[in-house]
Length: 560
Image (cartoon, rainbow, N blue to C red; front, side, top):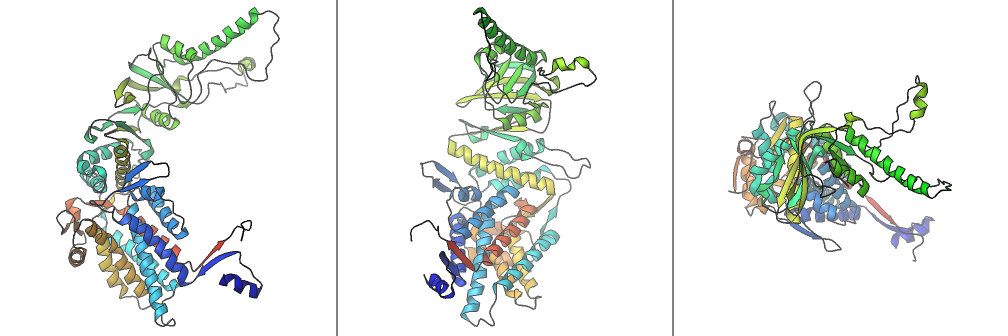
């Protein structure tokens, strides 16, 4: 109301509410800390899970930071920045979503306390937000440089043991942490199976979109499997009259309807003899049969389509002894095409035209099926898995796609296993692509804390205080890890900071409550995960601390 009164006195009326100065900063930091406190107890190998119930009663149980924040309906604009931050970390790295939000919130809290301290003492000698932001940027630049020079371990010939340890580190905080040995090996094999080699052999790619994850109820989680050299689809035969097993298969992948040919709308035919109607119907059936026969004549004995197959077409496939499946998701067909070396066909129309052939005009509008679009595999079989059937393609002739079939007791467990496996796949992919790793368990944060405090003494300006606060903010990760493990955080952090000066790979052993060399113990993470999480968290904190005014406009149509 005061803002409106001031506006009237100056002739400028603001149709809304306005917050400015320290008031808006306090509001933003409080909202960010509220989001951070939701995630804090889920950090680390002994972190707890969250149960989220939506408005229709669906239950989600997880401790994945990005998943938790995605389900929350966050209204505060500053808090939404942290929600977007977790989503960015998830898409860019795949792991570390919880820690990046916690670091960003701690940077905000400490930056805001510096501003509050300056306003409570003497504003002329206090710290301006711009000075704090400048200090944070200096600390970030020095941190990334220190990680690359001193903490990063380059592994030129990446052995499986490093990859398995990294996958286990990611899984230890998840539901499948007890079976991390089993699933870590599965994750490494799956990522390696989709490798795409570059021309120079230096920068190979590992597209995780080529890894197909299926979930089936029943059995224990350790009976999950990676189909070696094969592919699986969550689909079944279109008819019980089709065989359940075929060998030496040629597979046609279609993105179109297979149904009885019908005349287009708007076409009228004048018929004098009623017998002509039967001939038209017969010709429609013949066109359909010719189309099906065209596919079968190429040697295809397995036909998959993303759309429908009507009874007439199914009859011809059954008579030919072929297997066909309908309503297969297009993304699954694209993955399968990579695995078997085929192509997805969207139309059978013949678009070729030869200008030198005078009779080629007669062939316009004809339909053909190119045999080169067929994929090949040694065998196709349908098996009952859990409550339904799955179609297995064994001995695929292509490359660059694989399938993991997860087994579990219920839907909640399967969904959480899927999320945990996705994080581990991302970790393995990042290490394989960057060939670099760092020690986990708070080792990087403790080493940076010690280094940044030394670095701050070399800065002769006010940014020194901001760099020190940045250094102390990083300790929120090992502190939270220790608290979640029911250990004495103060003692452990003091010992950790002392020992990290001798060995920068020293980190927390949360099971025994001691300090150890985590690089030797196999607790490792991708270096890119730490670097990007620091960058993302710092940029998010800077974005929010730069705000000193918030204006919420009211709808002019709304009643006063």
